[in-house]
Length: 90
Image (cartoon, rainbow, N blue to C red; front, side):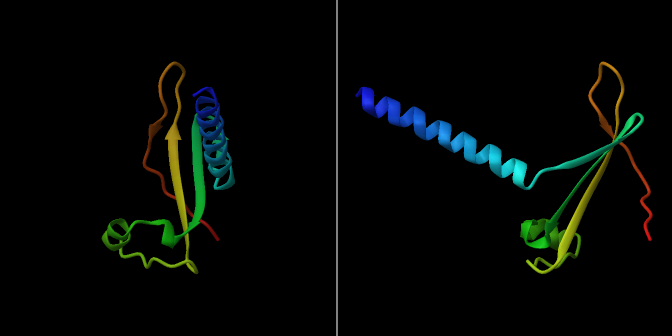
């Protein structure tokens, strides 16, 4: 019984470690500009679920990229709040 409990604890620890490394691997990126945080992550569009892709007319493919960008306004002693933003690029 003691060996089974030890094996269960080791397996759970390993599983948590793998999930932590997976989260770091696809890691969210963030830049801070004063009171604004800009979070971004690039994925292939195959990561979008079929319903979401269809709703926004996005083709799901391992060959197509998808960039998710969120802008949050921060304030002391409160949670960040999403804000509308206009993005431009060259």
